[in-house]
Length: 84
Image (cartoon, rainbow, N blue to C red):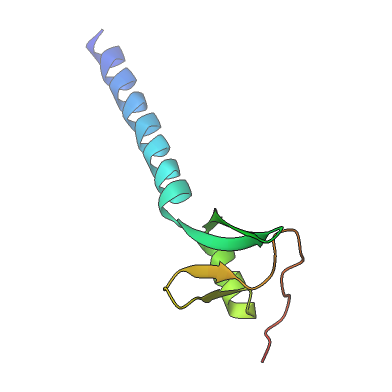
């Protein structure tokens, strides 16, 4: 009986650990950026991996207030190659 309880506790621990790591990867490694939609500025979350790619090809930049903004409008195709 005690062996079964230990197995349940260990499995529950790993399930909770997996949920915690998934949440960390999903929510902590994302950044809010500002984009233009039909003339209005909106803020969207973007995953860090996609943000690094956009930054390397010139798809995002910092504005005067320090916020990250897209250089292309929502719905447009982002740049594919480096501008330099």
